[in-house]
Length: 306
Image (cartoon, rainbow, N blue to C red; front, top):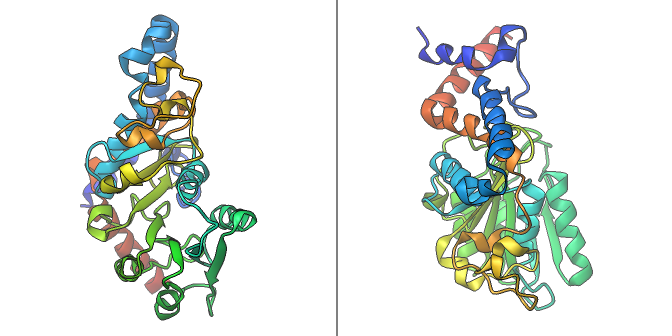
């Protein structure tokens, strides 16, 4: 008997549908409704006090739940609204006008990611996208060859959204660090379905969202930044939550927080964080390794039947 079948009752849509589109929108956990009711109850009864009773810490507290899934330590992941805001935060940490101004990506990266990279060409960045010969994979040797001494950032997807091709992040990170470049990994299509450990992989930044395999719904992206890099990074895309003393309301240049809050910006989307929590808890409880094993088994069965 497959133990994972017991989890089907936690997702109401499975009672009436065959849900095969988690790569686009994961099924809503039953308990997410309760979380949303909790949000409404908290807002209606606690009012402004809700901020000091949990809301202010939610970007980090929910980030810790994501961290359990992707291998980050407590306090190393913060929540933002979506991957685009996370990517904008990372890209704003660098000067693109100098000689080390190259961004290496793959032509099969998600379009929003590439839009942001190409937008930086206006301020001096050079964008190199490694092509695919078959529309499915990206040749590793070609990717590694594109990473050179002029590369500032390598921005790649762990799992390609169009084909499910898994890229060799260990090799890519190794080459990037060898030439002094940093690596931003989009793990949207791998977190929750492919085991990964951001610290073991050595990536400098990782970002993803909750819409897909994490079953957390829209409005909750997450950003991991390697802890030893924090003091060196000063995002230009910022906001009051990133301030060391946000409630001082200083009008001058920002004094960044010493922890991962320095990578936040404006007021967080609290309702989305309530909605996302249940999916993170379920994925962590089930275990990504078990999910991956079943995925491989079911895929093999479909191939054999076809």
